[in-house]
Length: 498
Image 1 (cartoon, rainbow, N blue to C red):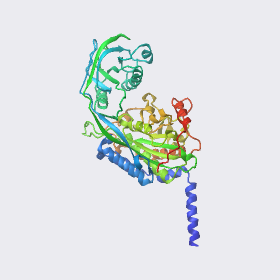
Image 2 (spheres, rainbow, N blue to C red):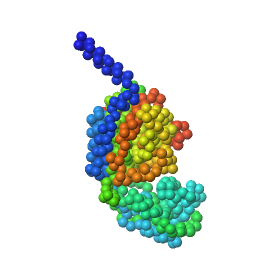
Image 3 (cartoon, rainbow, N blue to C red):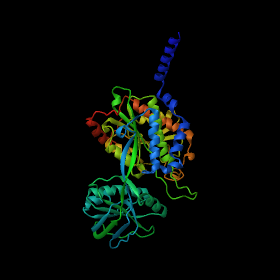
Image 4 (tube, helix red, strand yellow):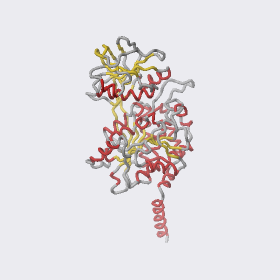
């Protein structure tokens, strides 16, 4: 009789597990205490802001790798490890930048992209440097000079985004350098100099890479902009000297789980987040100099850990690849390295579910950057509603946030890739109070809200991974054609990593 009872209990337990809904399975693994413990460790003073290339970020990487091991997630990195080695270079700022040009006096610069150069040639002025301006004028072999931003849109972040487009056009047209004349307030100047004029970390350069130079030339805030003739060539000398480079290492952390469906397990969902932050800076009035990065991006990192723990216990139909990227704060470097050196064929990755955060100002919402840009949007909405939240799309399109996180490298390759963020209605003072500030500490967050947010993330993951219909871009999206091209190949067999 005891044997029959044992058999019955085992069968009943098996039936119960199978009968559990995805939401039940989420509730069974997500713990508010565990969430707090992970975040308090990753955003602790002892990890000193998890700067790329630091000894402290290596501690964070080990913590993440060992957490995956503890959950039963298999290693997916180099040589059977949980780590993909990324080769970085630490590049010092130049010792000197000198630019000589009649009628223009610029002596202070922001180093948007620099390399050593000794240019004696022609500069051509293109106003605000619109697409039409570049099409009308020959800039090959010249230094392109413009005003920063677009006419009528010269706020700092607008100027930054416009400058990236100008750089792309100038390089494509064969220019040697781009110098944008910009006026910044003292706080803006300090912020840009901190980000661009100090030593920076990049992926180790390869022979033959572009040596294009891009500078912001600083004009005094009240100074009258120089009167320059549109399209006119003028002699210019630009000298940049004293850039030193040093090799250094970094690590992406990777693990995988095989799916349960005989066919769908050939398709992978990537669950990604960056685990680096910006390290240590100048002390504030309270003498705090550590940028702990609790929101950005300990929260995102822990959402992926929660997904790994849940899916390890309750496997999904599709296979899973969990990736924690290094170097995001240095220019999305870890994710760029991965898509150029993937551990599985990218056409087997059918979705990248990225998690990144700047902050939150609405605890009734989850914000999905690209909610309606893929066919999986319905799953985000359903998952949020299950835990009393409302899923909304990007409320600040002017910030171009979709293209400013690790998801964009997957998107450019064609992989559908939204970013899952905490709830915000605008990129307002409540966000900027913590975004890249020493105030972004674990004890400043609402963990009752995070508990619902984390459950919503993991349920979204399960719904996408178990959906018989393969997710894809919404027709007409700017990455739709790249997706069609990527998945039309289907040449390589998926590599299930042993």
